[in-house]
Image 1 (cartoon, rainbow over the protein chains, first blue to last red):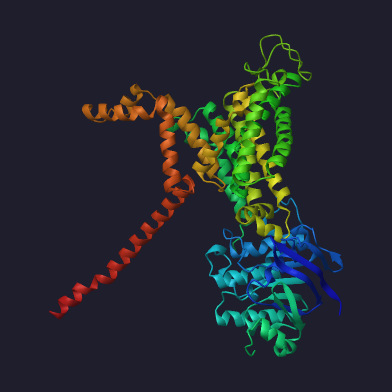
Image 2 (image 1 turned 180 degrees about the vertical axis):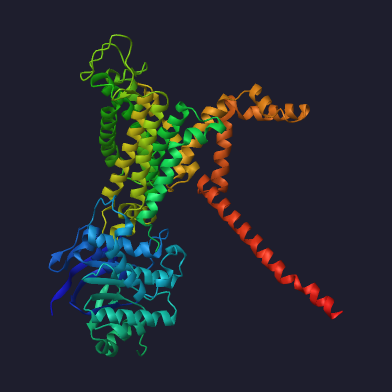
Length: 252
Length: 387
């Protein structure tokens, strides 16, 4: 198995508070790697360091062997690392379909293309791909609605669609089921399982243990900015250190 | 299908072209059917359509777009002075030079967004305005304004013997209706380009930048070149509008670059409807109509308009309404602008849309009432039978 993403010795401090300390993590191709940990453990900070939103104080983030530190967010996107945000980051004034067309155009057009004289109506390929993904997400009957008017759960699925339409090498999911009703959560798990079968590598940050144990091949536990354990779901379940730090001694 | 079809666009264009070319006919009942004013509609319409490509699609509010208007005018007059009185080179050069100015001003101003962007553009415009009066006097001829003279080189034209030459298109003089139709054709082309941009992937990407620029970066776009492209395009439209001003009247003054001129195009766009295709044009038309027709009305004419009222009422109505015309037209414009912004944030075009749906629902409920009645009608018959 080859390593897609390799995080080496990453430190990040915010005004004296150490958010991340000496993080080392390898993400294997085709695997779903979950990062769990209590609130404030540094999970979102770690993702932000990967996609260029934050620059770590030390260390490297190598994606397919190339250091991503200091690269522009749009270049990281085109390298094949795509993030789905925790609070839905969509285009609220655009329609649901347009929201998914935009990342489709990004994938095809690159960081800039002046296609001001081609008609949207002639972009059949991009549209077909978007429709296909929206169908998978169960949003097909809402495509003409404005995205801002959707329910929170639907917005989250729309964001997932926006990530998937770019067919990334590595998908970073920040709590993909937060704010979803139980049946929506199950539906999202099924969806993510299908994606996994297609061989897409994923990092998932999640609070919901049901989601983590249904999807993850490997789990890393983050507590107070440090990785205290990495292993298979079974190893993590049985790890006393994890139960102590993260679950307060409760049985998983 | 949400995507507008290509055939649809051609229908829109055909209707638009027909409306513009027949404007002298359908605008004459309201007193606006003369070429000078029609030309102004077309010129400021182009200015507003171009401004809307920046403001309407990206949400970046430039407060210094008049600078491109001025640059367009100066370039056109220089073309008339040095090259030829033919309007085509003047227009082409004006668009080009305004585009170059837009590259520089846009590149620097777009380093910031929101209010800071607006202030930067305003600063550039005021700077250009003041330079035109001082350091750049050799180019702009300062307060007198740039004018044609008998000594001008005009290297492609035959030397004239009698008086100053006038602008022309291959021998056709650019005054009166031929001047209007020339502007009208350019307006139609300008509108067509704007329509294509609105319905293109590029246009959609600009709208997405307006909606959530941060998200665009993480979606894989470098937003700066998109914004700069929109800025340049709208600057070129303004350059075209400026050159057309010089075509209708071949002189150029720095007052075209003053901040009030930049503010006017903002008003036009907001009044008509920001981000809509036809709204800015509508706004330009309304403002120019107020400026030219309302300001020219005097109490005598008001007495004529209201002569059908009883004398005592006529005097009261004229006394009140005369405050709103003539020199008071600014008040009328200001009040209408306030009313539109408060009650119709989408501009006049939103009002038109609302009226349209209201009429439709009224018509529908009329139909429904009729059918209700036909259902209810048999009842009395039934009750009568029972008795």
